[in-house]
Length: 110
Image: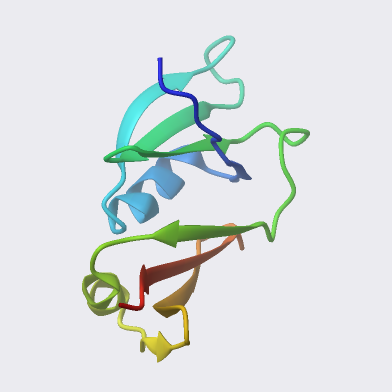
C-alpha cells in the first residue's frame, strides 16, 4: 500500500462535480451511498492524484484550496479558457469548481 493524503471537497451534486473534474483529467473510481437517495461520496483520480468529493455537509467546508502539480498547465488553461500566470516557482492557473472550491494548478518552473 502506498501512503497518501487525499483532500475531501464538499460538493452539492456529485455527478455534476465528477463531470467538471473530468475536464481536469480526473476519472471516477467509485461512489458510495449508505442508501439510495442519500448523499454520495465519490473518489476521482488523475493518475496517482486522488480527490474525494462528498455531498455530506459535515465532511468539508466550501471554498477549500487544493494545489495540483501537473506536467502541462497550458493544456489545463486551454481546456478552461483561462490565462496562465508566471510565478518564480511555477506557471499556474486558479480555477473554481461549481461548488466554489479553489484549485490552483501549476507546472513547476525549471
